[in-house]
Image (tube, helix red, strand yellow):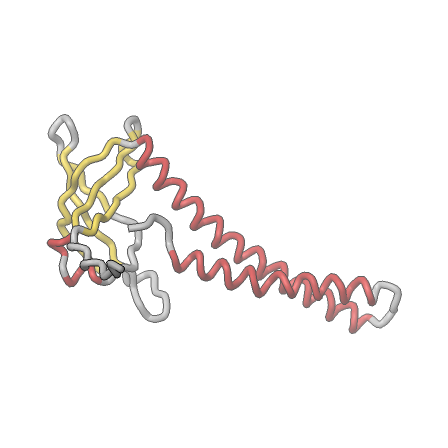
Length: 169
């Protein structure tokens, strides 16, 4: 499954798209009213621009957060040591909700090269078909070689792909 969080990406995009026009229109209003001495209009333009800046900053924070999660996963897959893990438990994270839905968290167990067993948890996953058919999924844990507290749990979908329909003309 693709690393990163689609929800963060979507929220970040929406907030950024809302904030950018607010900032632009607030700056235009302030520049047009700079010579005027009507305090109410100047305060309104400043509030408009300020709201836009807040939305834009929140959107960019969400977008960069998602990007950093994807970069961490890519780095771990490139530089980390892979271990095949057994999914021991899957449960809903009730502390985080989006549109009334809670994400899944997987608890996995793997053995390292020395034979010791480690328990790890995945990030929040939004794929609900994991609970329907957990035997068709496996987990691979990518562990940083010199710091085993840094890891990434990759969930691999092993369901057979549906046959592709194509035209032989």
